[in-house]
Length: 592
Image 1 (cartoon, helix red, strand yellow):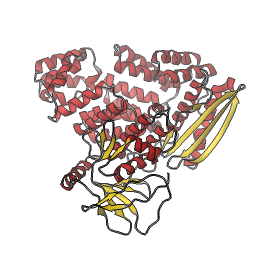
Image 2 (tube, rainbow, N blue to C red; image 1 turned 180 degrees about the horizontal axis):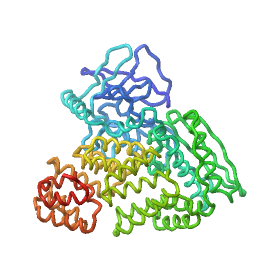
Image 3 (cartoon, rainbow, N blue to C red; image 1 turned 90 degrees about the vertical axis):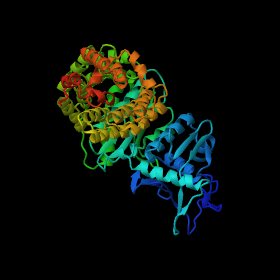
Image 4 (cartoon, rainbow, N blue to C red; image 1 turned 90 degrees about the horizontal axis):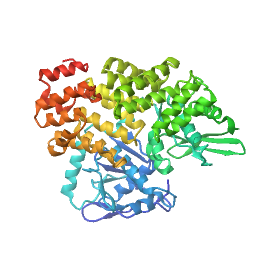
Protein backbone atom coordinates (compact mmCIF):
# COMPACT_ATOMS: atom_id res chain seq x y z
CA UNK A 1 0.00 0.00 0.00
CA UNK A 2 1.26 3.47 -0.75
CA UNK A 3 2.25 5.60 2.22
CA UNK A 4 0.07 8.60 2.94
CA UNK A 5 -0.11 11.78 4.99
CA UNK A 6 -1.87 11.63 8.34
CA UNK A 7 -5.33 13.20 8.34
CA UNK A 8 -5.70 16.61 9.87
CA UNK A 9 -8.98 17.08 11.75
CA UNK A 10 -10.51 20.52 11.12
CA UNK A 11 -13.21 21.94 13.41
CA UNK A 12 -16.19 23.61 11.78
CA UNK A 13 -18.36 24.29 14.81
CA UNK A 14 -20.46 21.13 14.50
CA UNK A 15 -17.85 18.41 14.76
CA UNK A 16 -14.79 17.25 12.88
CA UNK A 17 -14.35 17.08 9.12
CA UNK A 18 -11.45 15.54 7.27
CA UNK A 19 -9.02 17.68 5.36
CA UNK A 20 -8.15 16.62 1.83
CA UNK A 21 -5.49 13.95 1.60
CA UNK A 22 -3.24 12.23 -0.92
CA UNK A 23 -1.87 8.70 -0.90
CA UNK A 24 1.74 9.90 -1.12
CA UNK A 25 4.39 11.07 1.31
CA UNK A 26 5.63 9.63 4.62
CA UNK A 27 3.30 8.36 7.31
CA UNK A 28 3.17 10.84 10.14
CA UNK A 29 3.54 9.46 13.65
CA UNK A 30 1.72 11.09 16.52
CA UNK A 31 0.57 10.20 20.04
CA UNK A 32 -3.00 10.63 18.77
CA UNK A 33 -3.71 9.44 15.25
CA UNK A 34 -6.83 8.28 13.50
CA UNK A 35 -7.18 4.58 14.23
CA UNK A 36 -10.73 3.63 13.22
CA UNK A 37 -13.47 5.07 11.06
CA UNK A 38 -16.86 4.01 12.39
CA UNK A 39 -20.14 4.19 10.41
CA UNK A 40 -23.32 2.40 11.37
CA UNK A 41 -22.39 -1.08 12.57
CA UNK A 42 -19.13 -1.08 10.60
CA UNK A 43 -15.60 -0.18 11.63
CA UNK A 44 -12.74 0.51 9.23
CA UNK A 45 -9.46 -0.21 11.03
CA UNK A 46 -6.89 2.03 9.35
CA UNK A 47 -3.88 0.41 10.96
CA UNK A 48 -4.83 -3.22 10.31
CA UNK A 49 -6.47 -2.32 6.98
CA UNK A 50 -9.57 -4.32 7.93
CA UNK A 51 -13.32 -3.84 7.74
CA UNK A 52 -15.34 -5.31 10.62
CA UNK A 53 -19.05 -5.63 11.32
CA UNK A 54 -19.91 -6.27 14.95
CA UNK A 55 -16.34 -7.45 15.50
CA UNK A 56 -16.49 -9.93 12.60
CA UNK A 57 -13.88 -9.47 9.88
CA UNK A 58 -15.30 -8.82 6.39
CA UNK A 59 -12.87 -9.53 3.61
CA UNK A 60 -11.79 -6.69 1.36
CA UNK A 61 -8.95 -6.64 -1.13
CA UNK A 62 -6.33 -3.93 -0.63
CA UNK A 63 -7.80 -1.85 -3.47
CA UNK A 64 -11.33 -2.19 -2.09
CA UNK A 65 -10.08 -1.10 1.33
CA UNK A 66 -8.32 1.96 -0.09
CA UNK A 67 -11.37 3.02 -2.12
CA UNK A 68 -13.71 2.60 0.87
CA UNK A 69 -11.28 4.51 3.09
CA UNK A 70 -11.03 7.35 0.59
CA UNK A 71 -14.81 7.68 0.35
CA UNK A 72 -15.34 7.48 4.12
CA UNK A 73 -12.61 10.03 4.86
CA UNK A 74 -14.18 12.53 2.49
CA UNK A 75 -17.53 12.27 4.22
CA UNK A 76 -20.27 14.06 2.30
CA UNK A 77 -17.89 15.30 -0.40
CA UNK A 78 -17.93 13.96 -3.95
CA UNK A 79 -14.97 11.77 -4.91
CA UNK A 80 -14.63 11.89 -8.67
CA UNK A 81 -13.57 8.83 -10.66
CA UNK A 82 -10.43 10.71 -11.71
CA UNK A 83 -9.61 11.44 -8.06
CA UNK A 84 -10.09 7.79 -7.08
CA UNK A 85 -7.87 6.65 -9.94
CA UNK A 86 -5.19 9.16 -9.00
CA UNK A 87 -5.18 8.56 -5.25
CA UNK A 88 -5.74 4.79 -5.16
CA UNK A 89 -4.24 3.48 -8.40
CA UNK A 90 -1.74 6.30 -8.82
CA UNK A 91 0.63 5.76 -11.73
CA UNK A 92 -0.27 2.10 -12.27
CA UNK A 93 -1.17 1.21 -15.84
CA UNK A 94 -4.74 -0.07 -15.82
CA UNK A 95 -6.19 -0.78 -19.24
CA UNK A 96 -9.83 -0.88 -18.19
CA UNK A 97 -10.07 1.37 -15.14
CA UNK A 98 -13.77 2.20 -15.53
CA UNK A 99 -14.86 -1.42 -15.48
CA UNK A 100 -12.43 -2.23 -12.67
CA UNK A 101 -13.74 0.61 -10.51
CA UNK A 102 -17.35 -0.41 -11.18
CA UNK A 103 -16.60 -3.95 -10.01
CA UNK A 104 -14.65 -2.62 -7.02
CA UNK A 105 -17.59 -0.43 -5.92
CA UNK A 106 -20.03 -3.33 -6.45
CA UNK A 107 -17.85 -5.55 -4.23
CA UNK A 108 -17.68 -2.88 -1.49
CA UNK A 109 -21.47 -2.48 -1.63
CA UNK A 110 -21.81 -6.25 -1.28
CA UNK A 111 -19.57 -6.23 1.80
CA UNK A 112 -21.62 -3.38 3.33
CA UNK A 113 -24.93 -4.95 2.29
CA UNK A 114 -25.63 -1.69 0.45
CA UNK A 115 -27.97 -1.03 -2.47
CA UNK A 116 -27.07 1.27 -5.36
CA UNK A 117 -30.75 2.12 -5.94
CA UNK A 118 -31.36 3.17 -2.32
CA UNK A 119 -27.86 3.70 -0.91
CA UNK A 120 -27.21 3.78 2.80
CA UNK A 121 -23.47 4.25 2.39
CA UNK A 122 -22.22 4.86 -1.16
CA UNK A 123 -24.17 7.06 -3.56
CA UNK A 124 -23.40 7.07 -7.28
CA UNK A 125 -23.45 10.46 -8.95
CA UNK A 126 -23.70 9.83 -12.72
CA UNK A 127 -20.82 11.29 -14.74
CA UNK A 128 -19.27 12.63 -11.50
CA UNK A 129 -18.23 9.96 -9.03
CA UNK A 130 -19.28 8.70 -5.61
CA UNK A 131 -20.22 10.14 -2.25
CA UNK A 132 -20.30 8.52 1.20
CA UNK A 133 -23.72 9.45 2.58
CA UNK A 134 -23.73 8.12 6.14
CA UNK A 135 -22.14 9.86 9.16
CA UNK A 136 -18.61 8.74 10.03
CA UNK A 137 -16.94 8.78 13.44
CA UNK A 138 -13.17 9.18 13.64
CA UNK A 139 -11.82 7.20 16.59
CA UNK A 140 -8.55 8.79 17.71
CA UNK A 141 -6.08 6.42 19.33
CA UNK A 142 -5.68 7.54 22.93
CA UNK A 143 -8.74 9.82 22.82
CA UNK A 144 -12.53 9.29 22.82
CA UNK A 145 -14.32 9.07 19.46
CA UNK A 146 -15.27 12.37 17.84
CA UNK A 147 -18.29 12.53 15.48
CA UNK A 148 -17.60 13.67 11.91
CA UNK A 149 -19.28 16.79 10.63
CA UNK A 150 -22.60 16.71 8.89
CA UNK A 151 -24.24 19.61 7.10
CA UNK A 152 -27.58 18.14 8.10
CA UNK A 153 -27.09 16.61 11.54
CA UNK A 154 -30.71 15.55 12.03
CA UNK A 155 -30.86 13.95 8.61
CA UNK A 156 -27.55 12.22 9.23
CA UNK A 157 -28.79 10.84 12.53
CA UNK A 158 -31.87 9.45 10.80
CA UNK A 159 -29.68 7.83 8.14
CA UNK A 160 -27.61 6.20 10.89
CA UNK A 161 -30.75 4.73 12.49
CA UNK A 162 -31.88 3.41 9.10
CA UNK A 163 -28.45 1.92 8.46
CA UNK A 164 -28.46 0.21 11.85
CA UNK A 165 -31.93 -1.27 11.30
CA UNK A 166 -31.09 -2.44 7.81
CA UNK A 167 -27.87 -4.03 9.05
CA UNK A 168 -29.94 -6.38 11.20
CA UNK A 169 -31.00 -8.07 7.97
CA UNK A 170 -28.81 -11.06 7.10
CA UNK A 171 -25.51 -9.71 5.71
CA UNK A 172 -25.12 -10.12 1.99
CA UNK A 173 -22.09 -11.63 0.35
CA UNK A 174 -19.80 -11.04 3.32
CA UNK A 175 -21.70 -13.63 5.34
CA UNK A 176 -20.88 -16.25 2.74
CA UNK A 177 -17.23 -16.27 3.77
CA UNK A 178 -18.25 -17.65 7.15
CA UNK A 179 -20.55 -20.37 5.82
CA UNK A 180 -17.52 -22.35 4.74
CA UNK A 181 -15.62 -23.96 7.62
CA UNK A 182 -13.90 -21.06 9.38
CA UNK A 183 -10.45 -22.36 8.45
CA UNK A 184 -11.17 -22.66 4.71
CA UNK A 185 -8.74 -20.72 2.54
CA UNK A 186 -9.98 -18.89 -0.58
CA UNK A 187 -7.86 -19.21 -3.71
CA UNK A 188 -8.26 -17.81 -7.22
CA UNK A 189 -6.49 -19.18 -10.29
CA UNK A 190 -5.93 -16.19 -12.54
CA UNK A 191 -6.02 -16.73 -16.31
CA UNK A 192 -2.57 -17.72 -17.51
CA UNK A 193 -0.81 -15.22 -19.74
CA UNK A 194 -0.13 -16.56 -23.22
CA UNK A 195 3.11 -14.82 -24.14
CA UNK A 196 2.93 -16.11 -27.71
CA UNK A 197 -0.71 -15.23 -28.41
CA UNK A 198 -0.92 -17.74 -31.25
CA UNK A 199 -3.86 -19.85 -32.29
CA UNK A 200 -2.16 -23.00 -31.02
CA UNK A 201 -1.10 -21.76 -27.59
CA UNK A 202 -4.14 -19.69 -26.53
CA UNK A 203 -6.28 -22.81 -25.84
CA UNK A 204 -3.38 -24.39 -23.97
CA UNK A 205 -3.09 -21.36 -21.66
CA UNK A 206 -6.85 -21.45 -21.05
CA UNK A 207 -6.70 -25.19 -20.49
CA UNK A 208 -3.88 -24.83 -17.98
CA UNK A 209 -5.96 -22.36 -15.98
CA UNK A 210 -8.99 -24.63 -16.07
CA UNK A 211 -7.12 -27.84 -15.21
CA UNK A 212 -5.44 -26.29 -12.17
CA UNK A 213 -8.79 -24.80 -11.05
CA UNK A 214 -10.49 -28.19 -11.39
CA UNK A 215 -7.80 -30.18 -9.59
CA UNK A 216 -7.49 -27.68 -6.72
CA UNK A 217 -11.29 -27.54 -6.37
CA UNK A 218 -11.31 -31.23 -5.49
CA UNK A 219 -8.04 -31.17 -3.57
CA UNK A 220 -9.24 -30.33 -0.06
CA UNK A 221 -13.05 -30.11 0.18
CA UNK A 222 -14.12 -27.89 3.06
CA UNK A 223 -10.58 -26.60 3.56
CA UNK A 224 -9.86 -24.87 0.26
CA UNK A 225 -12.47 -22.74 -1.53
CA UNK A 226 -11.48 -22.19 -5.16
CA UNK A 227 -13.08 -19.22 -6.94
CA UNK A 228 -15.17 -20.20 -9.98
CA UNK A 229 -13.64 -19.74 -13.41
CA UNK A 230 -16.58 -17.56 -14.51
CA UNK A 231 -15.52 -14.79 -12.14
CA UNK A 232 -11.83 -15.26 -12.88
CA UNK A 233 -12.21 -15.29 -16.67
CA UNK A 234 -14.49 -12.26 -16.69
CA UNK A 235 -11.64 -9.92 -15.87
CA UNK A 236 -8.77 -11.55 -17.73
CA UNK A 237 -7.95 -8.22 -19.38
CA UNK A 238 -6.90 -6.48 -16.14
CA UNK A 239 -5.17 -8.01 -13.15
CA UNK A 240 -6.18 -5.10 -10.90
CA UNK A 241 -9.85 -5.93 -11.42
CA UNK A 242 -9.16 -9.58 -10.64
CA UNK A 243 -8.26 -8.57 -7.09
CA UNK A 244 -11.96 -7.93 -6.49
CA UNK A 245 -12.41 -11.67 -6.07
CA UNK A 246 -11.34 -11.23 -2.41
CA UNK A 247 -9.15 -14.33 -2.40
CA UNK A 248 -6.62 -15.15 0.30
CA UNK A 249 -4.25 -16.63 -2.27
CA UNK A 250 -3.69 -16.20 -5.99
CA UNK A 251 -2.12 -18.45 -8.58
CA UNK A 252 -0.80 -16.72 -11.65
CA UNK A 253 1.20 -18.09 -14.51
CA UNK A 254 2.46 -17.65 -18.02
CA UNK A 255 3.16 -19.83 -21.01
CA UNK A 256 5.71 -19.38 -23.78
CA UNK A 257 6.51 -21.67 -26.69
CA UNK A 258 9.81 -21.23 -28.50
CA UNK A 259 11.91 -23.51 -30.66
CA UNK A 260 9.72 -26.54 -30.05
CA UNK A 261 9.98 -26.13 -26.27
CA UNK A 262 7.19 -24.93 -23.97
CA UNK A 263 7.94 -23.06 -20.74
CA UNK A 264 5.22 -22.71 -18.10
CA UNK A 265 5.88 -20.46 -15.10
CA UNK A 266 3.58 -20.60 -12.07
CA UNK A 267 3.52 -18.56 -8.85
CA UNK A 268 1.50 -18.86 -5.64
CA UNK A 269 0.93 -15.48 -3.98
CA UNK A 270 -0.54 -14.36 -0.68
CA UNK A 271 -3.15 -11.96 -2.02
CA UNK A 272 -3.17 -9.25 0.63
CA UNK A 273 0.42 -8.16 0.12
CA UNK A 274 1.06 -10.05 -3.12
CA UNK A 275 3.87 -11.87 -1.32
CA UNK A 276 5.26 -14.79 -3.28
CA UNK A 277 4.98 -18.10 -1.42
CA UNK A 278 6.10 -20.52 -4.10
CA UNK A 279 7.09 -20.52 -7.75
CA UNK A 280 8.32 -22.97 -10.34
CA UNK A 281 9.04 -23.10 -14.06
CA UNK A 282 8.22 -26.21 -16.03
CA UNK A 283 9.62 -27.09 -19.44
CA UNK A 284 8.70 -29.72 -21.95
CA UNK A 285 8.28 -30.53 -25.59
CA UNK A 286 5.66 -28.48 -27.38
CA UNK A 287 4.57 -31.63 -29.20
CA UNK A 288 3.60 -33.16 -25.84
CA UNK A 289 1.94 -30.04 -24.51
CA UNK A 290 -1.19 -31.81 -23.23
CA UNK A 291 0.77 -34.31 -21.19
CA UNK A 292 2.81 -31.37 -19.91
CA UNK A 293 -0.38 -29.51 -19.06
CA UNK A 294 -1.73 -32.39 -16.97
CA UNK A 295 1.55 -33.05 -15.22
CA UNK A 296 2.01 -29.35 -14.45
CA UNK A 297 -1.51 -29.11 -13.01
CA UNK A 298 -0.86 -32.16 -10.81
CA UNK A 299 2.48 -30.75 -9.66
CA UNK A 300 0.99 -27.32 -8.92
CA UNK A 301 -1.90 -28.87 -6.99
CA UNK A 302 0.50 -30.93 -4.91
CA UNK A 303 2.79 -27.97 -4.27
CA UNK A 304 -0.02 -25.59 -3.32
CA UNK A 305 -1.75 -28.04 -0.96
CA UNK A 306 1.56 -28.93 0.67
CA UNK A 307 2.25 -25.22 1.23
CA UNK A 308 -1.22 -24.46 2.58
CA UNK A 309 -1.88 -27.75 4.39
CA UNK A 310 0.55 -30.24 5.83
CA UNK A 311 0.53 -33.91 4.77
CA UNK A 312 -2.08 -33.40 2.05
CA UNK A 313 -1.99 -36.08 -0.64
CA UNK A 314 -3.90 -36.05 -3.91
CA UNK A 315 -4.99 -38.91 -6.17
CA UNK A 316 -3.25 -38.88 -9.52
CA UNK A 317 -5.66 -37.68 -12.25
CA UNK A 318 -6.46 -39.90 -15.18
CA UNK A 319 -3.95 -39.60 -18.02
CA UNK A 320 -6.09 -39.40 -21.15
CA UNK A 321 -5.17 -40.31 -24.70
CA UNK A 322 -3.27 -37.39 -26.22
CA UNK A 323 -5.74 -36.70 -29.03
CA UNK A 324 -8.71 -37.11 -26.67
CA UNK A 325 -7.15 -34.67 -24.20
CA UNK A 326 -6.52 -32.14 -26.97
CA UNK A 327 -10.13 -32.40 -28.13
CA UNK A 328 -11.34 -31.97 -24.53
CA UNK A 329 -9.32 -28.83 -23.91
CA UNK A 330 -10.43 -27.36 -27.22
CA UNK A 331 -13.99 -27.93 -26.03
CA UNK A 332 -13.33 -26.28 -22.67
CA UNK A 333 -11.81 -23.30 -24.44
CA UNK A 334 -14.95 -22.95 -26.58
CA UNK A 335 -17.72 -23.95 -24.18
CA UNK A 336 -18.64 -20.35 -23.28
CA UNK A 337 -17.68 -18.85 -26.61
CA UNK A 338 -19.18 -21.32 -29.10
CA UNK A 339 -21.20 -24.11 -27.40
CA UNK A 340 -22.05 -25.85 -30.67
CA UNK A 341 -18.39 -26.34 -31.58
CA UNK A 342 -17.61 -27.23 -27.96
CA UNK A 343 -20.11 -30.10 -28.12
CA UNK A 344 -18.36 -31.41 -31.23
CA UNK A 345 -14.96 -31.37 -29.52
CA UNK A 346 -16.27 -33.07 -26.37
CA UNK A 347 -17.92 -35.78 -28.46
CA UNK A 348 -14.64 -36.25 -30.34
CA UNK A 349 -12.84 -36.68 -27.01
CA UNK A 350 -15.32 -39.34 -25.84
CA UNK A 351 -14.89 -41.26 -29.09
CA UNK A 352 -11.11 -41.25 -28.84
CA UNK A 353 -10.90 -42.37 -25.19
CA UNK A 354 -13.72 -44.46 -23.71
CA UNK A 355 -12.26 -44.20 -20.17
CA UNK A 356 -12.03 -40.39 -20.12
CA UNK A 357 -14.80 -39.09 -17.82
CA UNK A 358 -14.07 -35.34 -17.99
CA UNK A 359 -15.40 -34.65 -21.54
CA UNK A 360 -18.60 -36.55 -20.73
CA UNK A 361 -19.15 -34.44 -17.61
CA UNK A 362 -18.49 -31.24 -19.58
CA UNK A 363 -20.83 -32.39 -22.35
CA UNK A 364 -23.53 -33.15 -19.77
CA UNK A 365 -23.25 -29.62 -18.39
CA UNK A 366 -23.62 -28.11 -21.86
CA UNK A 367 -26.69 -30.23 -22.61
CA UNK A 368 -28.15 -29.25 -19.22
CA UNK A 369 -27.73 -25.57 -20.07
CA UNK A 370 -29.44 -26.19 -23.40
CA UNK A 371 -32.27 -28.04 -21.65
CA UNK A 372 -32.89 -25.13 -19.25
CA UNK A 373 -32.75 -22.43 -21.92
CA UNK A 374 -33.44 -24.05 -25.31
CA UNK A 375 -36.52 -24.96 -27.32
CA UNK A 376 -36.32 -28.78 -27.02
CA UNK A 377 -35.69 -29.47 -23.33
CA UNK A 378 -36.81 -33.12 -23.33
CA UNK A 379 -34.16 -34.15 -25.86
CA UNK A 380 -31.45 -32.06 -24.16
CA UNK A 381 -32.27 -33.44 -20.70
CA UNK A 382 -32.07 -36.99 -22.06
CA UNK A 383 -28.67 -36.33 -23.62
CA UNK A 384 -27.38 -34.64 -20.45
CA UNK A 385 -28.54 -37.54 -18.27
CA UNK A 386 -26.94 -40.18 -20.52
CA UNK A 387 -23.47 -38.65 -20.65
CA UNK A 388 -23.52 -37.69 -16.96
CA UNK A 389 -24.32 -41.28 -16.03
CA UNK A 390 -21.54 -42.48 -18.35
CA UNK A 391 -19.08 -40.11 -16.65
CA UNK A 392 -20.01 -41.40 -13.19
CA UNK A 393 -19.76 -45.02 -14.34
CA UNK A 394 -16.21 -44.30 -15.52
CA UNK A 395 -15.26 -42.16 -12.51
CA UNK A 396 -17.65 -42.13 -9.55
CA UNK A 397 -15.67 -39.23 -8.03
CA UNK A 398 -16.53 -36.80 -10.85
CA UNK A 399 -18.25 -34.01 -8.93
CA UNK A 400 -19.39 -32.13 -12.06
CA UNK A 401 -21.35 -35.14 -13.34
CA UNK A 402 -23.06 -35.64 -9.97
CA UNK A 403 -24.02 -31.95 -9.92
CA UNK A 404 -25.54 -32.21 -13.39
CA UNK A 405 -27.55 -35.30 -12.42
CA UNK A 406 -28.76 -33.50 -9.32
CA UNK A 407 -29.95 -30.56 -11.42
CA UNK A 408 -31.74 -32.92 -13.84
CA UNK A 409 -33.47 -34.69 -10.95
CA UNK A 410 -34.66 -31.37 -9.54
CA UNK A 411 -35.67 -29.40 -12.63
CA UNK A 412 -36.84 -32.19 -14.93
CA UNK A 413 -37.68 -35.28 -12.85
CA UNK A 414 -39.15 -33.41 -9.86
CA UNK A 415 -37.42 -36.07 -7.77
CA UNK A 416 -36.21 -34.04 -4.82
CA UNK A 417 -34.77 -36.90 -2.77
CA UNK A 418 -32.51 -38.09 -5.60
CA UNK A 419 -31.60 -34.49 -6.45
CA UNK A 420 -30.48 -33.99 -2.84
CA UNK A 421 -28.40 -37.19 -2.90
CA UNK A 422 -26.60 -36.26 -6.12
CA UNK A 423 -25.94 -32.65 -5.13
CA UNK A 424 -24.68 -33.58 -1.68
CA UNK A 425 -22.33 -36.11 -3.27
CA UNK A 426 -21.06 -33.44 -5.66
CA UNK A 427 -20.31 -31.09 -2.77
CA UNK A 428 -18.69 -33.88 -0.78
CA UNK A 429 -16.30 -34.40 -3.70
CA UNK A 430 -15.73 -30.72 -4.52
CA UNK A 431 -16.90 -28.13 -2.00
CA UNK A 432 -15.75 -25.38 -4.38
CA UNK A 433 -18.26 -26.28 -7.10
CA UNK A 434 -20.36 -23.11 -7.17
CA UNK A 435 -23.11 -24.46 -9.43
CA UNK A 436 -23.73 -27.39 -7.06
CA UNK A 437 -24.22 -24.95 -4.15
CA UNK A 438 -26.44 -22.92 -6.47
CA UNK A 439 -28.83 -25.78 -7.39
CA UNK A 440 -28.78 -27.15 -3.85
CA UNK A 441 -29.95 -23.73 -2.69
CA UNK A 442 -32.91 -23.83 -5.07
CA UNK A 443 -33.77 -27.33 -3.83
CA UNK A 444 -33.63 -26.40 -0.15
CA UNK A 445 -35.77 -23.29 -0.60
CA UNK A 446 -38.35 -25.27 -2.55
CA UNK A 447 -38.50 -28.01 0.09
CA UNK A 448 -39.15 -25.57 2.92
CA UNK A 449 -35.61 -25.02 4.24
CA UNK A 450 -35.36 -21.40 3.11
CA UNK A 451 -32.60 -20.31 5.46
CA UNK A 452 -30.39 -23.28 4.61
CA UNK A 453 -31.04 -22.67 0.91
CA UNK A 454 -30.02 -19.05 1.22
CA UNK A 455 -26.82 -20.13 2.97
CA UNK A 456 -26.00 -22.33 -0.04
CA UNK A 457 -26.61 -19.42 -2.40
CA UNK A 458 -24.31 -17.22 -0.36
CA UNK A 459 -21.58 -19.83 -0.68
CA UNK A 460 -22.14 -19.93 -4.45
CA UNK A 461 -21.81 -16.14 -4.48
CA UNK A 462 -18.62 -16.28 -2.46
CA UNK A 463 -17.15 -18.81 -4.90
CA UNK A 464 -18.28 -17.02 -8.06
CA UNK A 465 -18.94 -13.44 -6.89
CA UNK A 466 -18.69 -11.64 -10.22
CA UNK A 467 -20.88 -14.00 -12.22
CA UNK A 468 -24.04 -12.32 -13.56
CA UNK A 469 -25.74 -15.74 -13.67
CA UNK A 470 -25.03 -16.54 -10.03
CA UNK A 471 -26.18 -13.08 -8.93
CA UNK A 472 -29.45 -13.14 -10.87
CA UNK A 473 -30.22 -16.66 -9.68
CA UNK A 474 -29.57 -15.44 -6.14
CA UNK A 475 -32.20 -12.82 -6.87
CA UNK A 476 -34.66 -15.53 -7.92
CA UNK A 477 -33.97 -17.63 -4.83
CA UNK A 478 -34.48 -14.67 -2.52
CA UNK A 479 -37.72 -13.96 -4.40
CA UNK A 480 -38.95 -17.52 -3.80
CA UNK A 481 -37.94 -17.21 -0.14
CA UNK A 482 -40.00 -13.95 0.16
CA UNK A 483 -36.85 -11.95 0.90
CA UNK A 484 -37.79 -9.23 -1.56
CA UNK A 485 -35.29 -6.52 -0.60
CA UNK A 486 -32.43 -8.96 -1.07
CA UNK A 487 -33.93 -10.18 -4.34
CA UNK A 488 -33.82 -6.61 -5.62
CA UNK A 489 -30.29 -6.16 -4.33
CA UNK A 490 -28.84 -9.17 -6.13
CA UNK A 491 -30.82 -8.62 -9.32
CA UNK A 492 -29.53 -5.04 -9.34
CA UNK A 493 -25.98 -6.30 -8.91
CA UNK A 494 -26.51 -8.69 -11.83
CA UNK A 495 -27.61 -5.72 -13.95
CA UNK A 496 -24.51 -3.80 -12.96
CA UNK A 497 -22.41 -6.72 -14.18
CA UNK A 498 -24.51 -7.39 -17.30
CA UNK A 499 -26.76 -4.42 -18.25
CA UNK A 500 -28.60 -6.42 -20.95
CA UNK A 501 -29.90 -9.04 -18.52
CA UNK A 502 -33.65 -8.53 -18.95
CA UNK A 503 -34.62 -11.25 -16.49
CA UNK A 504 -32.93 -9.21 -13.78
CA UNK A 505 -35.33 -6.35 -14.54
CA UNK A 506 -38.24 -8.80 -14.30
CA UNK A 507 -36.99 -10.06 -10.94
CA UNK A 508 -36.80 -6.49 -9.64
CA UNK A 509 -40.27 -5.67 -10.97
CA UNK A 510 -41.81 -8.72 -9.31
CA UNK A 511 -40.06 -8.15 -5.98
CA UNK A 512 -41.20 -4.54 -5.91
CA UNK A 513 -44.77 -5.48 -6.83
CA UNK A 514 -45.02 -8.12 -4.11
CA UNK A 515 -44.03 -5.44 -1.60
CA UNK A 516 -46.65 -3.01 -2.92
CA UNK A 517 -44.01 -0.70 -4.40
CA UNK A 518 -44.35 -1.41 -8.10
CA UNK A 519 -46.91 -1.31 -10.89
CA UNK A 520 -48.77 -4.38 -12.07
CA UNK A 521 -48.49 -3.14 -15.66
CA UNK A 522 -44.96 -4.46 -16.07
CA UNK A 523 -46.01 -7.92 -14.90
CA UNK A 524 -49.09 -7.97 -17.11
CA UNK A 525 -46.74 -7.97 -20.09
CA UNK A 526 -46.03 -11.60 -19.22
CA UNK A 527 -49.48 -12.46 -20.59
CA UNK A 528 -47.90 -12.27 -24.06
CA UNK A 529 -45.08 -14.66 -23.15
CA UNK A 530 -44.65 -17.89 -25.10
CA UNK A 531 -43.90 -19.57 -21.74
CA UNK A 532 -47.19 -20.80 -20.21
CA UNK A 533 -45.72 -20.69 -16.70
CA UNK A 534 -45.13 -16.94 -17.03
CA UNK A 535 -48.61 -16.47 -18.45
CA UNK A 536 -49.98 -18.32 -15.44
CA UNK A 537 -48.14 -15.96 -13.10
CA UNK A 538 -49.49 -12.89 -14.89
CA UNK A 539 -53.06 -14.25 -14.78
CA UNK A 540 -52.79 -15.17 -11.10
CA UNK A 541 -51.43 -11.74 -10.20
CA UNK A 542 -54.33 -10.14 -12.08
CA UNK A 543 -56.85 -12.29 -10.17
CA UNK A 544 -57.84 -14.37 -13.23
CA UNK A 545 -57.68 -17.76 -11.55
CA UNK A 546 -59.25 -19.84 -14.31
CA UNK A 547 -56.80 -18.46 -16.89
CA UNK A 548 -53.92 -19.09 -14.50
CA UNK A 549 -54.94 -22.72 -14.00
CA UNK A 550 -55.40 -23.24 -17.74
CA UNK A 551 -51.90 -21.89 -18.38
CA UNK A 552 -50.49 -24.15 -15.66
CA UNK A 553 -52.20 -27.14 -17.31
CA UNK A 554 -50.43 -26.16 -20.53
CA UNK A 555 -47.14 -25.92 -18.65
CA UNK A 556 -47.72 -29.39 -17.20
CA UNK A 557 -48.51 -30.82 -20.66
CA UNK A 558 -45.14 -29.55 -21.93
CA UNK A 559 -43.29 -30.55 -18.74
CA UNK A 560 -42.16 -26.97 -18.10
CA UNK A 561 -39.06 -26.89 -15.88
CA UNK A 562 -40.36 -23.86 -13.98
CA UNK A 563 -43.00 -26.07 -12.35
CA UNK A 564 -40.25 -27.24 -10.01
CA UNK A 565 -40.74 -23.90 -8.17
CA UNK A 566 -44.54 -23.93 -8.09
CA UNK A 567 -44.64 -24.65 -4.36
CA UNK A 568 -42.98 -21.37 -3.36
CA UNK A 569 -43.89 -19.02 -6.22
CA UNK A 570 -45.49 -15.93 -4.58
CA UNK A 571 -47.69 -15.24 -7.64
CA UNK A 572 -49.64 -18.42 -6.93
CA UNK A 573 -50.49 -17.69 -3.29
CA UNK A 574 -54.10 -16.93 -4.26
CA UNK A 575 -54.42 -20.43 -5.77
CA UNK A 576 -53.07 -22.55 -2.93
CA UNK A 577 -56.46 -23.57 -1.55
CA UNK A 578 -57.75 -24.49 -5.01
CA UNK A 579 -58.16 -28.28 -5.47
CA UNK A 580 -56.99 -28.16 -9.09
CA UNK A 581 -53.84 -26.29 -8.09
CA UNK A 582 -53.14 -28.72 -5.24
CA UNK A 583 -53.41 -31.60 -7.68
CA UNK A 584 -50.86 -29.89 -9.93
CA UNK A 585 -48.52 -29.59 -6.95
CA UNK A 586 -48.86 -33.30 -6.21
CA UNK A 587 -47.91 -34.10 -9.80
CA UNK A 588 -44.59 -32.32 -9.33
CA UNK A 589 -43.95 -34.16 -6.06
CA UNK A 590 -45.15 -31.55 -3.56
CA UNK A 591 -47.24 -33.05 -0.77
CA UNK A 592 -50.01 -31.12 0.96
